[in-house]
Length: 181
Image (cartoon, rainbow, N blue to C red; front, side, top):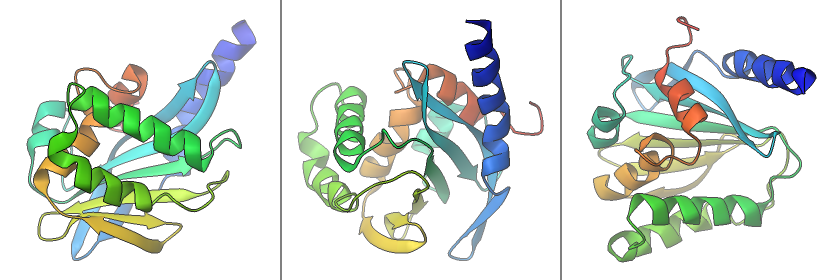
């Protein structure tokens, strides 16, 4: 049990090391706000990083902001499949919309299309929000789709940053600047 705790701690600490300190989004330079590991039943599934134009630890402000930002997900487990990731995202949208996804259903379907190919360990997904374009999804640096609308962006980022996030430990890590940890 102590070994598992130590191992999880090392995973959290190395999360930021697995992600670049900044990414380019169009003409915007986004800096790593915070990063962490998504775990489920003691299994590391992916490393996530939140990129913003400037540091921010207020989840409600980030969710509401109509400004460039990105979420990078780097798959670290062979247990993450295309269907498990899509199902997990669908569950996240249901949680963030109080179970009523009708208002953004068309956008969710467009988003799902971005994840139709096989997903394997090592894959990197960037979900970049640019107000004039919407959420742009890239897989391993290749464009997969764009989903317009601030409402969709708010629901997407809420999966990780809302009051009922997919993983509360990961939420805190995304809101904690890497330099502080």
